[in-house]
Length: 330
Image (cartoon, rainbow, N blue to C red; front, side, top):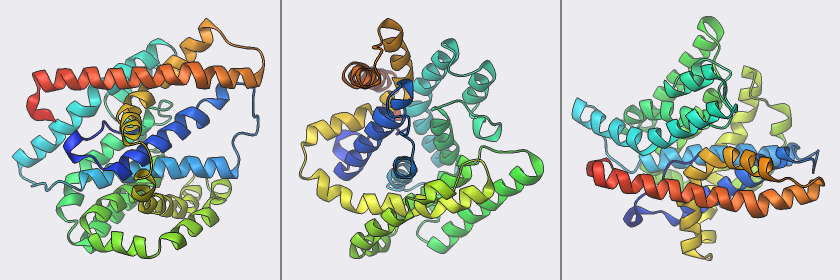
């Protein structure tokens, strides 16, 4: 879901807040409720619209955070960029992927394709971890987008060209997981938002209009879908509006909340996303109430906190090892 938190000296409180609330919604509601017999109508136009908004916000924040850095397109600059991103994300992702295969959440084929980072080009991708694979694919094209982000027209042209190339592949070469088409534009937008100050100024000027437009677009979650090109393009306005609409309010809200708690949740978000399904399955295997409401409470009050603490511990432990053995990979 979210990539590991930035170092303490470069944290963005608004981004941390968005990562915290989005991961809690995805893990604590969207992924948790289907394990129970409660709320059979949990997936409706409103809650599914919020799901798309949360995932779009994660992708937007990934592009935004990458856009902070200047990148050269020579081999040294590219090697440094790819090495850092791979070392920060891939080892924990690979561990989660192997465990997904061992406990039957992903098939052997999905594990192999996930390890090779080709899941989005060979659907169906494994559940949950498809998102991390997609983000890493976006990282491949990020240096080119960042390099030309001072010229927004060129960046949009590059992003549009990539989108057209993916559509051509899907139609005439081999089918894709179409979610890569859905979220690519908002990744590009995140980079541009960071590199083009005028976009932030514009969003702040029309902040309430953006929020109102987001609310109006939530019903697109009913008309759109993730399995057809038509459905993808119907969803795209919701994806593109939701992230900046939430982003523009994030700093104002985060400044009124308990900073250390927000930072803790944001830091733990990547590990929580990777391992929560494993913890949910283990918790259910140990004990599970019969009533739907009690099942929800059990998962919320027991399984979710354990997942959160494990996610934080795994991230902290890995970051400690990385700092010791790969000090230049931060």
